Length: 363
Image (cartoon, rainbow, N blue to C red; front, top):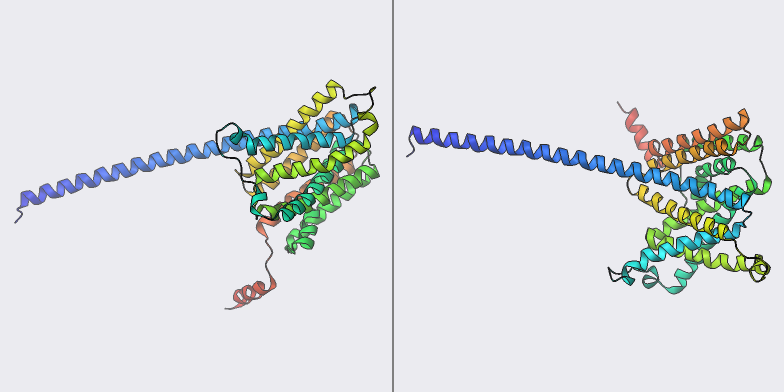
């Protein structure tokens, strides 16, 4: 039997153990909280760095495109092919570099996981679309101001909703549809008052938007099968390059095979630098996408376009009327409203609306 002294000793021991465990738990919680704060700061720092680099590379690519097309008088097909060449080259290095250097296996090819005919058809479709988007975007830059081209591109949500409804039967809520009104209205006002308006440039920018929206829907479908971002970027760039090369040879056959004319070193260096920035822009966009939500990515992309628009106006000194500035602001504001509506007002099918109404009306 235990006497009083033994009971007191046991109680004191248990109390000491309890206090020790409680203190250890508090210390562990403090350590976990400190680790959590460090991780949050680390993620925030990476987001800031990657987003800053993404904005910088996008600006360098955009202004570089305009400089090469307008000042150096390069052909849009040549510039587009150089960009696709750089993207395909770096994509090949990313896929097969570790294997060639003996540092790991190569990226698994989607060609080994599906019929060859399916792979070739998919690559032909997405290669044509990617080549067209690049070439049309460059043609637009050649004929109209950078700010106007970026304003047209910022209206992409308007075309995305339309083509998503046609291709994948995606429904949108009434609030999302209403948010598209200022997008379309701002674009119309901006186009009507644009001093550098050109029909070829405007149609090229609109077609670029339409094809880019279709390409995004189709790429999303491919990503749900045997592809990932790495191999999809490589194969689509290679397919676009394969399609663009015959066009370039046909258009510039007399220049390329004549002995009197050749590509200047300065233009070659500009194309190389522009191609690197073009590739890094895509890589950094994927890096940012992996750290933030889709809605935040869309908002960040809208902010990027707004900054590029006003930076181009300040840099090139393009004449901007009050109505033109108002149209640009309304279009950008409509894109922000669209992102907000997509996040807070998702589409609810009619079959789900009736039970919610009856439940809300019941006493």
